[in-house]
Image (cartoon, rainbow, N blue to C red; front, side, top):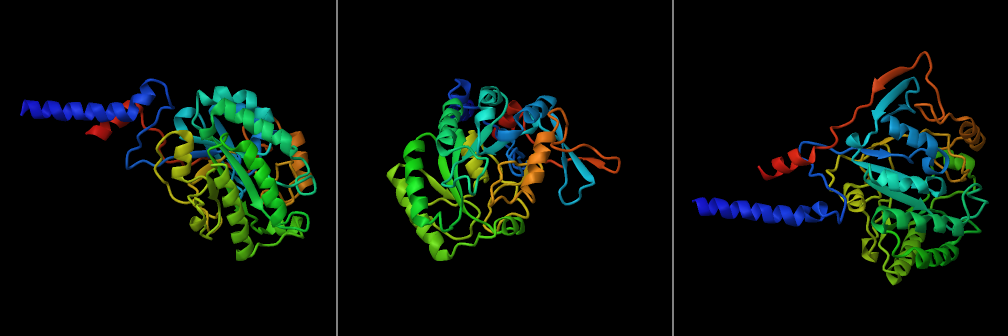
Length: 355
């Protein structure tokens, strides 16, 4: 009986060593075993604006403070207060078209947070993306980002895919091939999506149109063939059209699986983010940003009503304010942001895992 108990104990220790050995010896980031009754919390620094490009100082100030305010876009008099210290953030998700202003801060953030870093580089010029860096500059930033954070954490976004007289299928595939040759091996995956005609997009970009199913299939097939030639993992985002027959993943750009792979941890799905596109499989997150604050000026942007207003708000923003491009008003009602319980202390979670 005693021998049997000893065998079971040694078996558990062996499995524990196999699972956590790389953590103990520093070969990868620590993973948290999340209990079945807990959900995860994702903090998004880029859903409503490009914080790494334009608000890096404000962003770092809020992380140091450990909390921030976020105005509810649907109920403007409601202001939510969220905690953003490492203990309360499972994954910090950031996406940018210009990583230059944030690069020097990446090593410090890696010591505190599990990071997932998206870099958007497309075929478009100043006619569609007036304030976005040139392709060569953007690629240089991505390559440095990959060097600092490691390819596993870095995602290349080629989106949104749209078609005009200047940007046809042929032009997209030629540009994608050039970019894939430069970026393959430096990113974990390339994610693409198709233009979604939100009301703001239709108003600000009159020439925009939805792609037909045939056009989407042709583009996806071309991207898949190029990606395969460079051993680049390709994944779609925000579409309910299935491209799995082309070898394209469709798990969602911020799904539990995708974020867990990039951040080096295990995440429990917490449900789809409400109000997103029909094919969206992203987890629910909390957003640090605000609409009408991104000065990139992209014609296809879903987050800006007015480019001039966004640029003005950026120029006048206060890096020391607890709320981005805003200030509290007398009529505001401040509420503690509802968040699921976040991190389980590693020792407690490991003990609960084995009992």
